[in-house]
Length: 383
Image (cartoon, rainbow, N blue to C red):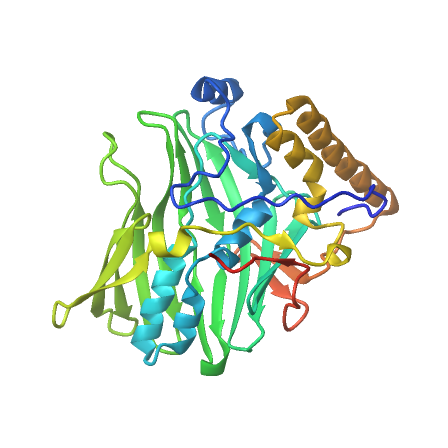
């Protein structure tokens, strides 16, 4: 939870990661691999790194909440509108598959976003889409997302609980939680999971999304099974994706999915062999603009870009002492607030979501409000 007694700070917003997983700035430290291995020298294989705090030298100047929300509002093409306006259930499922691939953004090897603090929020609008995120738990880290459009066509409700483990030559993050995309006027709900994030140190350092994703729509009886694959041991076949679109009741394959999620992905109609492109990374992720503050008075104290502004400023100027001290101040403030809550025997309650958890189903989040209002931070139209 963010203390409103903080001195007012300016929101620091940076450009989204580009098509190649790079940024307009190179945040990576010299001798990067050696520095990373030094961090993990005394950590046992299999250890949980979920709450591991990185020094600012290994951070990019944005929070994980921002990285979680960016794929929704930082796109060149409006793929969500395609999902809403496709004429047939099969065309809509195919459009949803293409959109789901577009939210799997490449990341930069050797650096990571900040771990969000409890109660941190991120609220951004682009065109008619409004996106709101909140960190609803800190130990363990759980993030909730709610997005709606002004036309009343769609709603997204996501809950994300990452678990990160160290395995000697790699770090693997398993992303638990359900993602729902609702096409409101059609009464269709598409439910999907996330692949795993794999950071490899050897033999070729890199970051990839790997594993299986299922997308289902019980209303139409259609679904998809996708498999994200990392490169081979010699670095070939990078970022491939294969899968199929099926009839859920019969398991009959209707389309085959094939391609690379950092270039193009196609579907092939198994009945006639015809192919079409459903995702083109260059069209979706090139020339993206950074969010901008449109209404400075409306920006919440809990906004990610405000909470971490001094840390981000230090990273951007490569003033590591400033960044380190600023990050320490944020973390110490959180520990202070937790001690105060504990002394009063208070339980922290999220502002924007109702949260539930059980051993069988894990974490789940429901938005308190029906729709997300327009945000004080907007993404300008892409040039």
